[in-house]
Amino acid sequence: MTLSVTVIVPAHNEEAGLPATLESILRQTVPADEIIVVDDGSTDRTGEVARAYGVTVLTPPRNLGSKAKAQNHALPHCATDLVVAVDADTVLAPDYLEKIAPVFADPAVVVAAGNVQTRFTRTVWERGRSIEYLFGFHWHRPIQHAANSPVVCSGCCSAFRRETLVAFGGFPERTIVEDMDLTWSQQIAGRKAVYVSGAVAWAADPETLTYLRKQVWRWMAGFFQNVRLHLPRLITRKPLLALWIILAVLEIITAPLWWATPFIVTLVLHKSLAGTLAWWFGAELALTLPPLLYGARRRGVPVWRVMVSLPCLYPTKAVNLYYAWKALVVELVLVPLRLSSGLVVYEKGRADTAAALP
Image 1 (cartoon, rainbow, N blue to C red):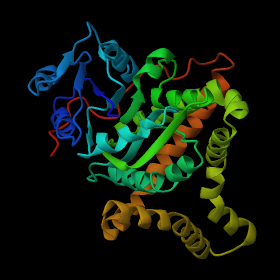
Image 2: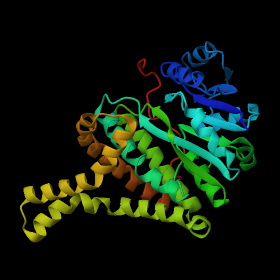
Image 3: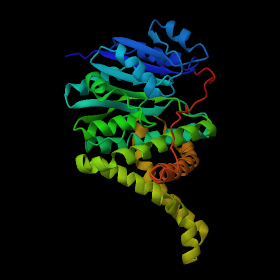
Image 4: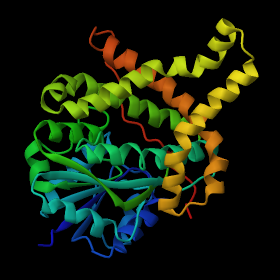
């Protein structure tokens, strides 16, 4: 049985990137039954651009303040079997819907997402993110999928069983990252989230440090908001997923020690710093390169391009680590003590008026 599909595109000041997104949706080998763009308080030509493509455009009376709220604004207008949420700067492969829809033949599956890669590698931060994605989507995600415990179905291109989504109350607005919240909530309820490696999407990631910081702070704060909200129930109802999450938290806690290891070894054991650093980088490469080379082969990315971008991973990791620790302290310590309200304001990871994208 063919399942009907509505694609929702939340968009706030996205006139530059929106055409490529809508064109990719309109070019699907299995067409969507409806495409809805939520022009969420834009001050540019987002609504006008969307209407030029003949899609449904919804315009809330004011900016709703988050992606989840914009998607929920569109949800009552959806009457299809599936809802696919696509960010306004994400481009889908032509067969994305064709690849993602069949997994819903299993009635237990309620959320699914594909393989996300970086659209552009123009800056240090985009290059660093491209390595993160190449590694994560060809190492962590397949393992989590095989264990039936995905940590997150990426919000930039996730598909949902509409009936279940509506019964849940729509996209959750209680945390700053609705994709992770929904992924964990549905698995706690005994339903399935799946990763579809053959469905590929390309996301436009932060091109500057300013916007990378905004995005990573939102992601990390949202992760720990979900840890605070869900971890006790995950331990009892979805222990394997709880294990991945606890390991992720332990990795964040111990990461500074790993980064400091060459200097600690040099000081304590009186070893050569150059030799210790060489050992440290060798260990890093041994752990990192195999999944990257496998991912490069799967995606048809030249190996030289991966190697050129690899050094950019470390500035990106440093930003990740800083905001991971900040989020841990704020969301797991200060919020329970009522010394902070945590992160409650949704900020985009890209400028409103980005240059036209190729």
